[in-house]
Amino acid sequence: MLRRLLLSMSRSERIRHLVETAPVSRSVVARFVAGVSAEEAVAATRELVEAGLLVSLDRLGEDTLDLRQATDTRDAYLRMLQLLGDEGLTSGAEVSVKLSAVGQALPGDGEKVALENAQAICAAARAAGTTVTLDMEDHTTTDSTLAILGKLRADFPETGAVLQAYLHRTEADCRDLAHAGSRVRLCKGAYKEPESVAFQGKPDVDKAYVRALKVLMGGEGYPMVATHDPRLVAITEDLARRLGRAPDSYEFQMLYGIRPNEQQRLASQGYQMRVYVPYGDEWYGYLVRRMAERPANLAFFLRSVATKG
Image (cartoon, rainbow, N blue to C red; front, side):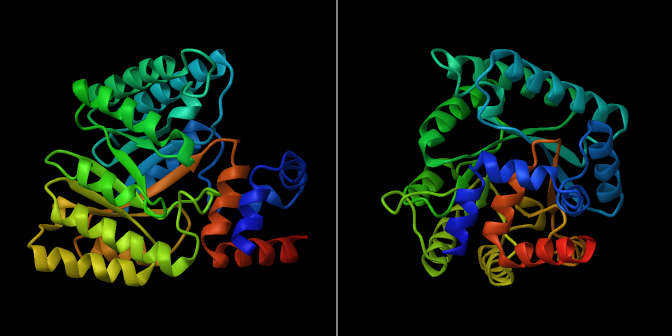
């Protein structure tokens, strides 16, 4: 019930305004968002890379319905990639892109605009010596996102995909994408989805995650295991041992500001450990979905408000 309430909040403009204008919000958000500017995000990236961690940078923003805004988002990614290259960080950092932020939802030729913008970002990433991963959003965009992924991979086969375990279709999608050279991030899913397309309860979502994880770990691709759940981390480690997977043939991923000690533990044990680092001023929806995913995040937020307020 709490998760459903929070996910509803993520779409509420009224509640968004209240949270964004609260004096305490910015200081609390700093734990989960690496600043507003590209320079702040690069500084956070440098600290993580120097600590032995990998990074995936996400410029927050989605549901773009204006062509100029989509173009501005594309240009912001091009600038970020230039900054990463100038700082010598591209061996440890890539970028994550939401297609809705680069034009996917535009009326008419939205998919074409998103594809062209994503192609420009992928080309810049390759020139800088790094990669791009396409984020996944609510279920209504899944087919479109996978279709654009297929077109991108014709020229940029290194482009990563994201699949959400709570969708009923995901195990089959994993089978389609578990081939050589295919980078796939598996997460649980953070959008409010109907029962007709997604598992609802935590036990069912966890079981679906493990089924999808087994497909990816047993395939020939490069699984990117996005979870903070200690049980799922342990299951991944066990699968890797049983399947004879080398430590550089898959990676763990966790969110910026969540379980940093565990991130360091995994990196110190020789695992590839990538931190998903969001930045930008469009942080509200991201933050609320993070709280919905994990009650401990909500408790942290409320404690901070009580203390600083």
